[in-house]
Image 1 (cartoon, rainbow, N blue to C red):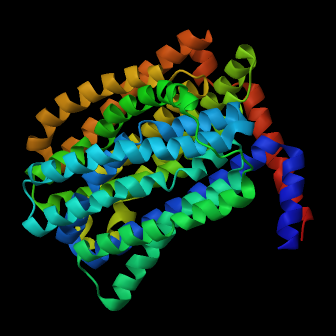
Image 2 (cartoon, rainbow, N blue to C red; image 1 turned 45 degrees about the vertical axis):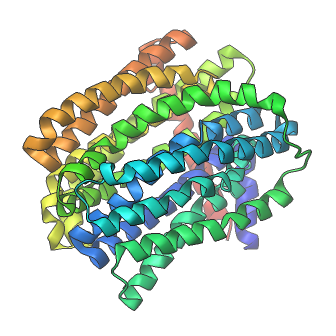
Length: 450
């Protein structure tokens, strides 16, 4: 442990941002591995039908939970970066706002769930209604967004890892005890998320100083920033999940189970570029010079473009071997859509980086415009492709819609920041030199620390 701390301190000395980026990238890789393990366990434990039913239980409550947050997580991270001394007030105010906002969403979701899950059996619909308890639980997980805004990324990475770790543990117990009931597993996970809220407040107690009194004056700026973010979340989630939502309503659980596995494999693209997105907002939002903001943003986007392309290509090439080997031969039909979704995940990761760039500039409206354009494309393509080609059709729709959002975001950020497309997309010799220099320094440091 002492050697690890020494290595970390030396790494911070080389580059504080680079150290946080490496930390977050490592955490993302860890979380991606856990996500892949959880997908593998769920697929093998439940089979295609049970895996589809589990997705049916969780998909709509997860969507509603994201909407009822009213963009508060993004606002909380942004204002904690801009006004770190008031972070405690922003936190308590945001929790109260979300708890009040979630009530109509829970009631509306409960009423609508039988219609949204029309193709599912009654027990699955009832389990999805119970899973709406996730909405108020999300309010208890707001504290870790403050840590991201304050650039306390060590604690932030630890807290955000807890839900997926608990899910993997639950699935491992399910395998050991032969609990292959998706309804029971979803209920155990919901309870665990509620109990683990205490971890957030325990960490905040030692990482954040007051004052903590909620302030009505903070609600207006919070919602002014957050509402465009949450409005953009609707088309964002539609672009990301509408394919699965329509499968839940129209197709048998087995098809949804096959597609869920393809999505799980495609998501292995995200860890590296996700780290760039997650460290970008606090870094850029804390800069008050527009020129310097634009420079940092452009460099990060350029690096993200090449990384996303290389990683997506690698995952796509591995798909024909990896999917049946990891998830089982029952999921062989998932391979074509998994290949397409690997490329789609690379484009999606770049899209998230661009969206975070817009948020870090204080312009969530840009994300709303771009995601709305993508949602229109998604709806049209799914209506045409899903009935005809099912898994492959859904994957093609996702890939094209993500590309559209990326192109719109690039145009809007270009206009907002006065940068050219080449400055945003094409890596420079200085970028390459920076990567080589920092990587060499880290490797020399790693070899010098026993």
